[in-house]
Each structure stands twice: as C-alpha cells, then as structure tokens.
Image 1 (cartoon, rainbow, N blue to C red):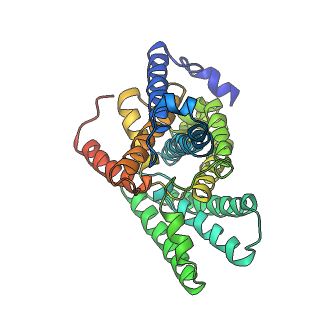
Image 2 (cartoon, rainbow, N blue to C red):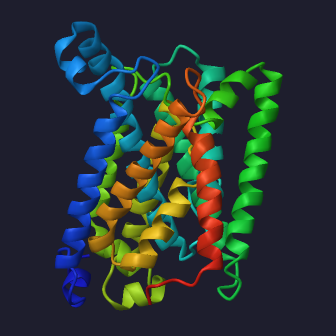
Length: 334
C-alpha cells in the first residue's frame, strides 16, 4: 500500500481548504454538543448545571453520555457509508441497503436465542461475524452485476436485505422476540446512560483507523484493475473496509439500533462539495454525520416534549427528503 500512496501526487495530508472545512465542522459540532447537554425533559441552563449538584449529576450520567453516543454513532455510520460506497463503486449503497444491518440483527437474534446469558460484548461479536458474512455475500452478488447497470446494485441489496429481514422477523415471531427486533430496528438514544454506550468508542476507534488508510480507500474507489495497476494491495484494502463496515454496524445496532440514511446521505452530501479524496473529506463526513444526527436527536426531544421521537425516525424523514433533493439537483463538484 505504501507504493500506491507514493505514486499518487497530492495525497497524504489534507489541503488548506480541507483543513478550514474540518475546523468549521468541528466548531459547529462543539456548539451542537453543548446545546444537546442542556436540552431534555428537565430543562436547565448551563449555569445551573455547574451550580446545582443534581443538575451536574444529570449531566454526567445522562446528557454527556447521550451526546457522545449520538456523535459517535453519526460519525461512524457516515464513515462506514462512504467506505462501502467506494468499495462497491456505487453512490446508492450503505450498510442499510447491502444487507449488513439485517445480517447483524440475525446474528444478534441467534445469540440471544441460543445463549441468552452471553455478555453484551460477545453478542456484539456474534452480530459482527454475521454482518461480515452478510456483507461478503452482497459483494459477491454485486460483482455479478454488469458495470453498466449501476442502479441494479442497490436494488439487489434491498432485495437481499429484505430476505434477511424477513428471516429475522419469522424467527423472532416464532421465539416471541418481536419486541427485541423492533428495538434493534428503531435507532434511538433515550436509554443511553453512563456505562451503556461505551462500546461505541470501539466504533470510533475503527473510524480513526480507517482514516489512516484513507488514501488507499480513495484509490480502491477507482476500481480493482486501476488500483492494482497503481500498486495497491486491493484485496487487503477491500478486506479491511468490509471488517470496518461490519464491526461498526454491529456495534451501533447492539447499542442504539438501526439508523437509516446516515451512511447514504452524508457521504453524497460531502462528496458534492469536496470530491472523493478521503484524506480531505473523511473528517468532514464524520463531523457532518455526527452534527446532523445530533440535530435530529434534539428535534426528537423537543417536537413532542415531554415524549420523544426516536432519532432514527427523524433522520429517516430528513434523510429521505435530502436525498431526493440531491437526486434532482446536479452536483456542484466535478
């Protein structure tokens, strides 16, 4: 992989404009995170959080963990989406349209049925292995689709994911676990407390590792033949990308459930502005995914207060509308 990095001029570190965009995104994300910490059923001010012991406890046990969970989920799902799109070379795929999420739910369901006493980390590993196998099957299906038929790729993924979801639904119905399945399919953060979200830091670590090989992912997006011609070890990059996508999907589903459209909308939105060089765009993709999911989570807390609308539902509506707008508008970048 090192020879591939050296053969592409301009790769290796973000450009000046990219660094500016990254700083702006991080600044906005910090403002949103601060706002998220003071929004909830118990409305409070930043000053009260510092002076009132109960408010400070609420901040440490609930508000900060929830905010961190939203940021980690949005950032890592967006990164998983852009990696999947580059590996498949198709803008219309994400873990939710390739059967990855459904396979992870099948793995989690199997672990819950066969060994309900397993610790949550072991169940997550079962879900990750199932997600990995499910993703590999989708990639095998995608390689059989003619390159001149790109729209068939997401269609095949949706059909494949639908079959896996139907199998999970049938098993859950037979085992009286439909309520568990409904929880995993509805991404929301109301139950996130300190001690119940820390697995998401592993997803954040995986996203950080993905950034270390961002140049290789960019080259892999040119296709297998072009990548091998540039000296890239395509198989290794493909395998690493699939492992990152599968583990991130499993960690998110086990912790907060499925979040639709994050991995589909955010990479397309950033790509239209910054292009496909992941060394420049991946931090912006992560920050944008985290920021948009944070906004949707806060809207879910405010729209029907004191009740909550799951962040996955809000982002599903917002993401579908935004994706339709992007489909109907011509990209501003190349």
